Length: 416
Image 1 (cartoon, rainbow, N blue to C red):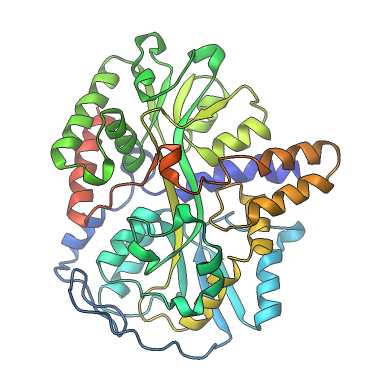
Image 2 (image 1 turned 135 degrees about the vertical axis):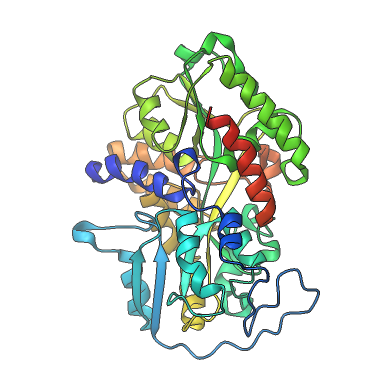
């Protein structure tokens, strides 16, 4: 096992995966639209105007062109020695499609700002496939910036997609995207330091003064706070957002929160500067089982946690949509997806990967066997068939205007 790779990949990857960044850094979607004077979303040959009652006119896919340009996050696919990417090489060898795979997405909102000028006037971005957080997929869809998928060209994805990732609120019917990886937002804590943490309400315990970490990610912190208040995030109103703000201000003003963190929450946990923190499952998995913090625990709060996804989508006017479909379908083969899961340590959307991980465990020896047995049975990598049975919820599907309003409410908390 390459411990150097394990020691560095998860922290960097998680920092890249989520959007906005510390303190809401990044360009607001609503503000960007207003600044650019974009009143109506663009249309393309495949996508109707967002909000239209018209049935999309979906033209047939062209033949495979043999070319593909993919925009992806760093450290979000399997690697081998000397920078090789085994599954990408297997895709090229089998399909004959030459792939230009760029790890060029570092922030969701910054990426939106980068591709907006072309998409807003119906022009090609130069990319055939891009991967973003689920809440941003929803924004792209509402603006008419992504193409509807041809599910007849995605038989493997249709057959092998886990139920937990089907028909999400951010993209009903998976009409415009397929999940790449997923994860859970919950609480990471040290039982010997923080005591018995069972839910979000425990992060308001005055005995933890200065020892609680909260996230600068609005979608995570607000969603979990709403759940604590007994509010379904999908049905939450602007008044509910203000109630969540009041609760967060109560926690902040009691000096319980040490700080609102971006990715740096991980190091604060590892150094035990905080005893309990909102956390992302991939980070918690790595540090508990690989990174040297075996006493760290991760729970889904009793009030509920968040199941999220990052998803692949085809921007309007992409030059090689058939090749993009071939790529998405290829990665829903369990024997391919298991290689990605083994490397990135995030939740797979692919049926059959867990069985293959169990097979790996059965033939491994010594420490590797124990490691793969842990992976194979981890709920952080393999979601329940019905997320509601695990008390998991999706983010609210925001309109652009709603996102801006909620961000302003949340920023009043983290910018004291």
